[in-house]
Image 1 (cartoon, rainbow over the protein chains, first blue to last red):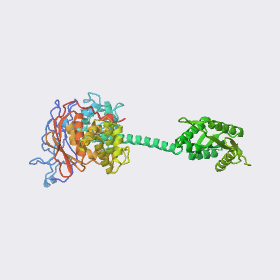
Image 2: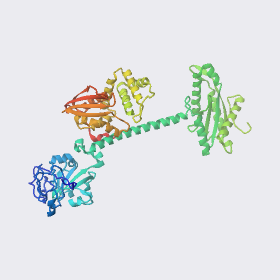
Image 3: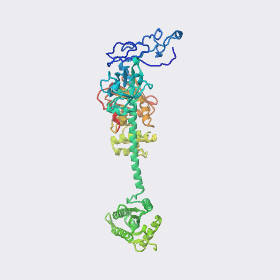
Image 4: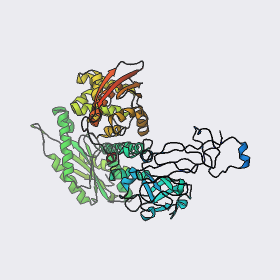
Length: 413
Length: 194
């Protein structure tokens, strides 16, 4: 048996009811829909629908029986006087397929005769194209992007048979492989490629529209599975972002009162100083708070703190920072309030508000407030630590002077 | 175990018995988790403890719970991803059964780290299937419930039995009487994307 690899495959008879009797190799199939497309590996066409191996052609010496292997020989080789010494080449095996079998293997096949007229359309391709294609010249309904502007079978087969065929606006371009057929025709096996993902829904294609060996269904499965996972990932990200935001807020909030905590206050102070913004700073301590805790319990104490917190927020503007910086210590940052008189007025209002007894479960809790204040305007170069320490000094001045009052910091304190 | 497993248990308990039941399960399990993330990886003992807690809280034997989970995976509408991905296996129920052998490979492609046990399917006689699982105990129960639900989904009339186990494995026997007994549920290839 020859060790030569097959140089060309195939042969197919696309058998349809109206196929004319098989003629010589050179003649092409008739123009009408039915087509007998047969490869003349040996030169003789089998009848339509025939499944028998080809009779040996004049080109090859007779063999006793056809070779069982699908070995093929180049049809160009002609027997010559020297050849009679070599072993007989294997008989080419005719691979004859019913149209239905071809359709199962290549549901998107397209068969053209040597004039470029459509002889057969696979069932899935038929779903994508307008009806009545067989019998029409392909050039009338589609153009080749690759090989560019090809029209004849020879041109189509130019770049190793790789083709891209565009049918118009309704369909994405189809990629494919073209192979020559006997009689000068072409068989194209086409695919939607990745466009299948979109087209599948538009055309309501089902798994049965693809060859069993085709990976389209696997591809669609992967697309769907990965999309689900991606969606889940996006949901997780959103949850994490929320949780992060909540954690950040929590890190800057005093849990009991909902006011800013010391860290938040320090951040705000630094930001404002960096911006060079003018602001007033008030430090406020509650007087007699310990007594409330001792006589009425911690629940009462908590309630007092929450009430004071709400009060302070109520008396300030949205842009102001109200922070709880210690057990019964509060700090307020008031952007824009740098005038001493204004500062004092705010402080006194707060002191007055806190002087009213706070009702806890029928019991009255009496606390008072002492305030120490300073402002950026009091300094050439305002500094956070300096201002905090000065406000503290002013606060102590208020306490020493009898509490329930506001003291403004000045250098002689 | 992949988070998908623990989330399936969470989804099943929450859907069928409510959030309070799930809270009881997580408390009883003592794993420290109140909820699970689909894309996380957890220690195997977490799943084992979770299932033990489900058993106690629901008062049903574990095998029954696993079957119900298998069923729920397919039948629950939330969001129906598992059911759709399984339907890719075949246009009809018998084709689907043939495809079960590929299921572990397919899921591994889709979700790295999610390893199903080895599944081998043989059509021992026409319409009579033998499904052998090798590797994880308990998955056979899940598959049992899942196959029942898939038969309904396809509209097939089938009998599914748990056959005698083999060493290291579980065996299911499926006899399909009619592939198109009822209309089943609709499935189109293109509808899974949102």
